[in-house]
Image (cartoon, rainbow, N blue to C red):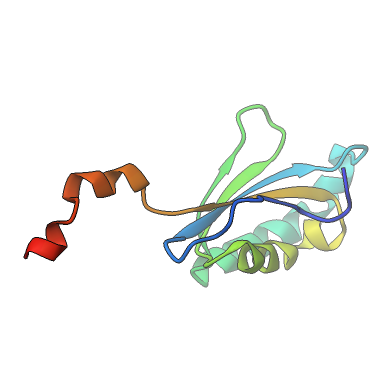
Length: 117
């Protein structure tokens, strides 16, 4: 994989309400390397949560990384948030970013209702 974070090719829209960040160790990175930095990573992650930048975070069930839901307007802002963490600064993780927004088919339920009111 490239040294640069993988970003979604999806074009962000003004309806973006958050960004999923999928993290996993780069190939060849050992558990020991990750665990040596984990105390600092945890402190920094909690601080981002307290600052309102991380909305939710989860461990992957396969044990291969984590998934964060970020309060970010776009992939660039999400990347900036995630690159501030110690594991990213040590270049130990690959990142994938997925911008998310309201479920578009729900707009069909309201149709042009605003135009008729």
